[in-house]
Image (cartoon, rainbow, N blue to C red; front, side, top):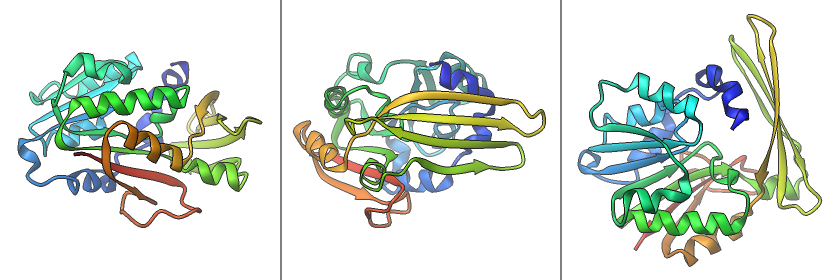
Length: 243
């Protein structure tokens, strides 16, 4: 996970806590004080920490040890919050059946899985871990837009501290993109460049795999405000229910 190790020091400036994400999560369930939630790809733990103010139990997992260490250090006073260095494909073994009321996977984390077969495997494991009526909430980039409109970049993230340039190069098979980033630290002028392959999975395939895993009432949104999904939507936000 060299990509994330290299940007972990500046992660909070690139992807600051988004209150709209929290509102989206809270809208999925009533009376969250009694509920348990799993945050997959939790990074430095900012989202999980805020969720701990609303849920009975919050577990955050990530594959980057440096980020998990930062999350643990910041969360020592929260007894209902736990962070683990853990693979998203092992959650059924770690937590068993019916453990969580919500499973959340934001930040384009899902497409780090290398194939649709692995995505299907994850959906099945999330279904196992969810209690009846529980929901899987996740967000990726809208790869239909990337493929069909031949989009080769995402909007640059810029503030007083950093500039984060993001480019896409689509493979000829239309199934993988190379995600190329350049992070510039404004105070020092330091520049950090990376490239990582991501799975370019289409919306229709996501819906098919979710239903095969046993999810129902699958909803797609164009953002965390629950605006309708459209061809031009940059993110793809998904809510799926375990019957």
